[in-house]
Image (cartoon, rainbow, N blue to C red; front, side, top):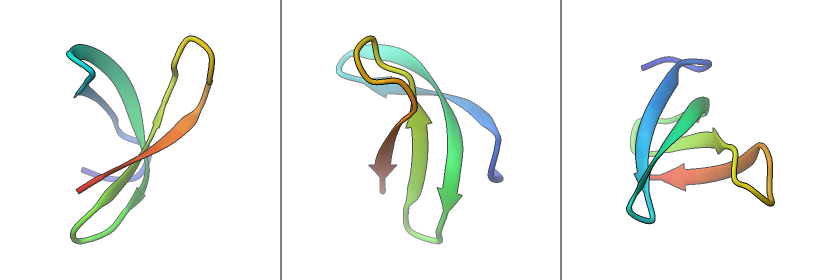
Length: 45
């Protein structure tokens, strides 16, 4: 996985398309488009 990669994640029981924003050894920051909030940054461990 590298910065800029497009991945699919499970979020609230649904599949969402996300792009990798920042990448660290133990966590990743993803940009996800929601209905009311475009380009929201979500942190995953």
